[in-house]
Length: 211
Image (cartoon, rainbow, N blue to C red; front, top):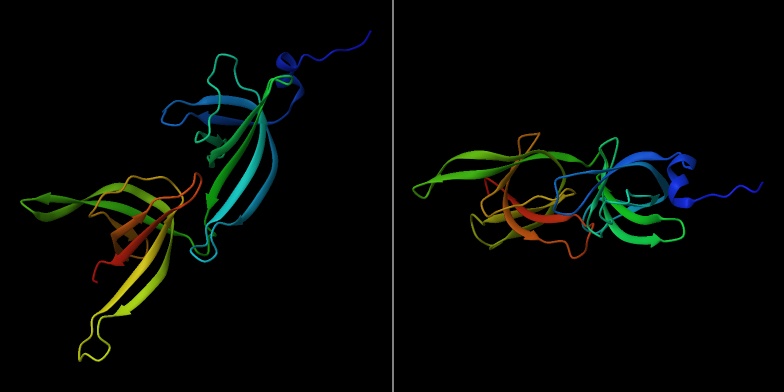
């Protein structure tokens, strides 16, 4: 007797994948997916002229619970190991009852990575009396951006040094925030360049606190 496969009913039993969690954009709940199939991954440096951030794009094939929401661009897919990636593209296959997703995960090579704490000033009466911890141990890269001299012929010229800080995880920043590295260097927020596209790192112009 011929054997027939019903894609929707048999996918979870025929496929041996890996467990992942889908986090809808703006939500705090997770949708567990037990048998996600990982496809090929393409890795390349995000912007060699600006930073050393590596973007890894991965294709996934998975089936979601019938009653659950559909995956959307901007949602987050988290592996069991805790690695998170943002969804860039989605495509649904009605015959197979499966979703095809393309995700992007950002990373920084360990040799160039820096862990920073983000601190916010505590202000009373117009004076900064201390600092509160906003986020701890954020993965980042700090790179020298520019060195400028106001008047090279002056006896005591003013030298301004700026750095470029690249963050690979989303974070909300406000004016006055500062970044403290594990080596003790302190940088003040100068300018934030918002990502022009989904899945891009956050680029921040910072200056040394002593500057």
